Image (cartoon, rainbow, N blue to C red):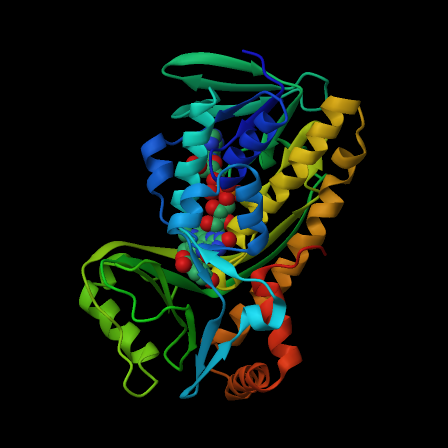
Length: 390
Ligand code: RFL
Ligand code: PHB
């Protein structure tokens, strides 16, 4: 097989890149180890920055998003018995849209397949060769057959457990990493959300987040110990813990209902630099991870491939390699801003391992400062809705 750009991974990054390349007349093939059904059902992120919404809309993917996505102009912070609404749109002129990541993935898969795009699902043993030559090769097995995909470039969009990054020789990449002593238990519940905007709650028992997907479906998260198992969290325990952490405002209650899905995700921060080696480019979770408290992961993945789309267009249309060479440096500016914001939100809102009373007072003071200073609240808001340029 031969294509122009070989893409490993059919998450938001890989699918969006394939779509953007198609719009510019550049051929690509996406290889994905899981089934279509699996990638379309994976429940994950839900918050799209304004820039991500604009990108999807400009790429012709805005129709269902406009109908089903919910525009949010604020978020609420709950702490120490207080509640403060960050009026994001009033402070920044911009908003976020709540639309499940799996809906973005479904829209992208449908658009690629409708345009005759090639996504090979359920491939095995993907490995990369000749990345320092002009004709790199993606080798894999598909339906029992060995396949060699020859390309001009390979883009690794294969997430945090992918293989692409490992194809770079030792000593080339530098990793910056932080792991946190907590995890998030996330649930999707058939319960009408008791909120119209996201609630981020700092509580002595641990962080909780009330989010939503539709008028019938709530998405909720609890800070838990990373060593805890799902079996230790029967539904009644989850609801009781959510109520303890969120029902701190008089007269307000959590709406309960059947839990449709639950999972535990450990939290970490990671940046690997540079995001390119020779003819291999890396994008999304394959090169950077953020804890979900800032809602940045999917947005960064989309921002990376927006840059790559432009850069490949410039290469194929005019033979210019400037944007490709600048890709890593340009992308990393946004990545590091999101790293700082995600770390900051995480540190301000989670129960600390140390139970250090001094640090707890600092958290509360930071939250009160956000609630009382327009400029501090604006700083949170502009990071949360996404900085147009950085
Ligand atoms: P993905 O989505 O992980 O996709 C990678 C794809 O590569 C495939 N793959 C391989 N394919 C072939 N060969 C191999 N060897 C392969 N190895 C892996 C995988 O099967 C998969 O299909 O990475 P991508 O595209 O970079 O997208 C990143 C986002 O998925 C991620 O950052 C977000 O989900 C993070 N995230 C959030 N991001 C936001 O922007 N806003 C949010 O509100 C938000 N909330 C969250 C989140 C992530 C969470 N979890 C579960 C980690 C909430 C949670 C709980
Ligand atoms: C979600 O709705 O899944 C969600 C919202 C905000 C976050 C993380 C996840 O910070």
